[in-house]
Length: 350
Image (cartoon, rainbow, N blue to C red; front, top):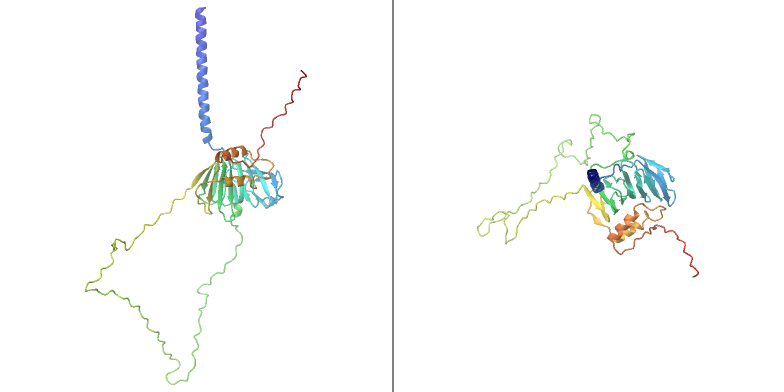
């Protein structure tokens, strides 16, 4: 009996140790996966369609030049355009976006903004003709003005702005293969008659000599070559030629080496509260910090005010704002968790 109890206790101890090892391996693997997960890019940030969720300031929202309504869907290779109105879109990736007035957006491998401003929250890669943004779920703005200059501003998260090797051109932007205006063809030398200029009429004078067919050649005035003053010997000593040696400790001739242009980066990484400007050719500017006034003006701008549904990441944007500008008042009121009304306990008469 004693041996049985001893064997039973030892087996239970071995089982417990085995379970503890399995749990330890499980939690170790879970921790490794958790550490590696933020470094993984989303499986697919390709936008294949966008659904109209909200329209503000009139009804000037168009899909393929057809007036759009709420719940209409813009599919791949289609274009969303706004006039004086603003709109909110929901992409197939779960990301949300807002378009300002006078914007043009193409749905495709990336959400290509041709003109205007777009606010994106979520995993959607936006682009223009010269740059492409890569995100892991964040909140940022892309702006393209009439001249083709662009700006990327990150409110929360991290965005990689990469310069396109070749400009992105949509199919509708490519020249159509139609009839081209015929340019006037130059006439061949064989069909072209020589242009004979009529000789200038010579005033008739009374003939006193040779035949009028003989015209004396006109004499051109002799060309005078400029005279070069050669240095004269001074004091019987010849003048030494210039040898580039310093005179009175001052160099006579200084040749500067050509300055090589600075290498433009192909991509930059923007963190929360940073921005970068990009010119028409895709040259990336210097990363700058958003000021408090810039941040507040964005949050009070037309891409935040007036919409019924707030963007999902607004609480993260507030955390970034409070971290960058301690003590500043966040301009957007976020409703908190409603607290249920608890009925008061009636007071007892004693």
